[in-house]
Length: 173
Image (tube, rainbow, N blue to C red; front, side, top):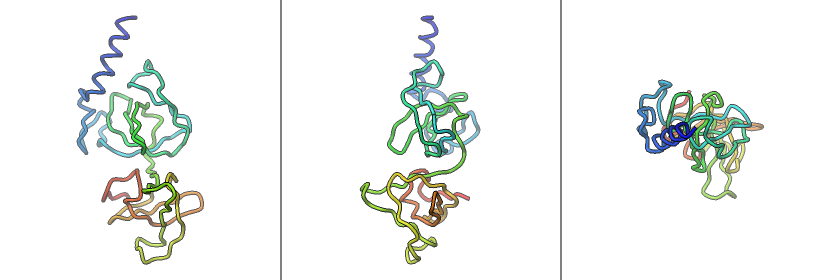
């Protein structure tokens, strides 16, 4: 039993220190999944346990209860992914609880500000909606600093800088 705890503690420490090759922090680093790190994904379920380390032996630190929430994968260890959310919280999630579907959260300097959603990727086009900070959108397409997003009751273009869940100047098809 003590050996098991020691191995879990050692594994956790190695993950925190980034000892594993798959925990590389450079963009487009090779990983166990063959996909780049960091990268954005979304939560597949409305009940996702976030653990302190990459095993089921680690305690559940908290539970996400919002399906579709975007998270950034910052490291991989076997079938576990270290994720960070838009508020900066990090923990380990089992890979099958994540989806490759791209979503993003509206971000504003103030929670009271509203982000304009345009008819076209042009500030001169008509505003079709104004979205509050924290609204989750599905990312349909991004190019040239603009993203087409949609959600419950809205569809349009938003400046890419207003989104957490896509990288600056990232192209999404």
